[in-house]
Image 1 (cartoon, rainbow, N blue to C red):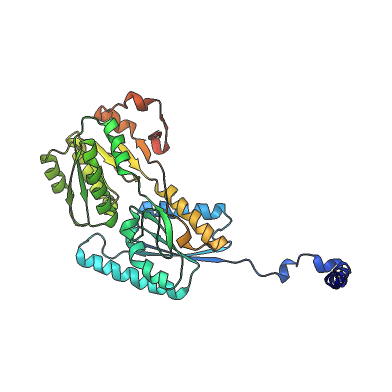
Image 2: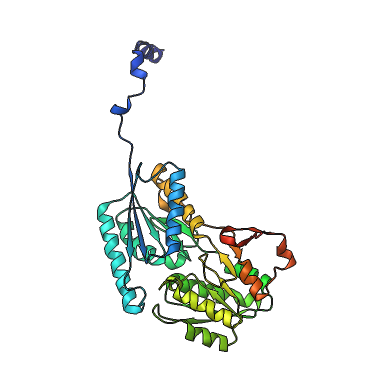
Length: 356
């Protein structure tokens, strides 16, 4: 009873407060809108990385985080003689990534977006120690970026991966090219490229397909390796997720196209970037995967969710594109099981829907 009596005067006081006391503060007296600061770190400057960033920023924009409004972006592109490749250059890249990571740690941004495996792998520990959230994208296999698993980024890290089930990708290839029993792949020491070729070799045996590979330096000509693989019986060439194919104005990809055309060998790309002469593309879309990274970044920036809580996201089904002109030149026809699932895609390609 005494408690009720004490509450009554307080209630009366609340009722006698002037109406203006309950009104919203005018904008001039409120805290200014917050501007988010994001650092972007990547090794090499290739078109797919730009697509990844475009997808990332598009998702941020859809959630009212926009450059020129409440978002500042600082982007660092590390080019350390990447076309010359080699062990010592890789050590140099590692040094440069860590150097930039220390600089970023001192600048205390709200979030760091790392694009690609090297930037993610070599910067994450430094940024974790500085308690700066890291979101990655364009990583072929999270395990190669020192993540705990395919869905767990580990301390201070989350993001989105280009990882797709290689066995599913190879089944699609086999559906369209049932006569192919040996595939040739050329790659460098690029972490994404190595991971992709390793996954292809691991799963191809289940489908009774053999995968032969050759590793080259980033400055090497691709043609000698193509000749060796062809002599070993390669009936098709496949392009992995490797920056090598985008160097020197796509010279390796162009040479691969010319070699394939001369020998009437189909070329399949497991990277969703335009490869001259490729008849089939099977893989994850860089922009879509970048958008998934943006989804996680929004949760971190707006809701202050810790990266550790968020799973790594990935495109559930691979994108499948067919170049109709190249297919006609090679005499390739879609099997009856896929004819009804195709529809016009971008850039003149036919997109094939992959069902469960």
